[in-house]
Length: 412
Image (cartoon, rainbow, N blue to C red; front, top):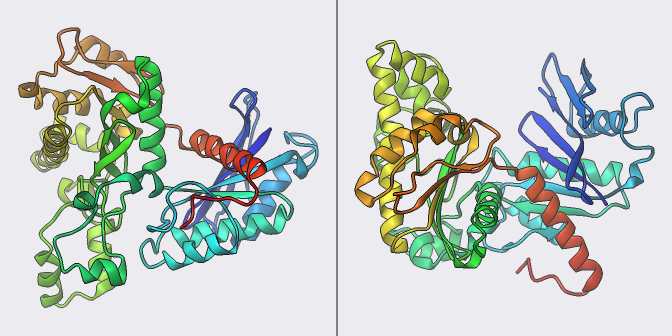
């Protein structure tokens, strides 16, 4: 079975083609700068043969045309015909409360995705454009939506509700939804496999650290709490997002004459490591290099980043009543031994101990246990693979649909 995974962003489309018999990648690529100048296609096959070229792409259907052409290209393609693709899995950021699992895309599901545009204005509209483009080029192929919010829908009300008038939840859906769910779900299950313990018996804290950052408490297969909220802005310090702040700051910015658009840019695109670090970069590698060279502001940004992770970890540890493992993932989580060391060293009071050698040797792309034998709980680095998780969920949905064509309990 061949599954195509599509991740349509605000100006790009990532794609991965899997052979699910082996879960191997047949090809993957990216069309970037859609609607802008210097639009480029990057494509790489399983055997290492790759292509990079400039392309003319103004809209998402143009991007899908480029993708389908390269997949069946007589020289570098990996398909003879497009109908070899048996299903398409789409990353969709927000499904609200109505969608609790991956879902076969029909008009009702598309309406829900559109209804969530105000909750994820930077993500759901391009996600929807990717779906509609695939329906055009693969008219007889089932499409499945895998939602970033779905994994977090097992949170209890005391976790997802805010302490604001209840009618704001009942009328407008203002609540915590959580994001990065596909990543948290993948690494949690991969950790269970690594530890050879059933997923529904583990207490885990999974920490996704990249340009966007989130941390999740998982209690025996169900999400107990997560750091991102109604939008991906809440929670940890991120590359350009502020994370937790006093809500009155927004009021004060209004008083200072800023409009909604300016405030949104400040908090989502000009804050976090970029805003605090003072070096014109949101890349943790640059922040660390600057702090190593004596830049006090960059060092302050690094300390704020670590402190927020430790703060959340301590609270989640208490809520769960202890944990079996703490999991690092994402570009920073997988790639920065220093950040991992700084976080775990500050959690020493909880009995956790790092194996310094194992930590240094665990580089990006490699899974491993980096805690010492004397540690009270395991610390694990687990590379995430959201595309594979989406492909797996897509297979599960279409298999379920074939077995029970009249039943779909993922949409309420």
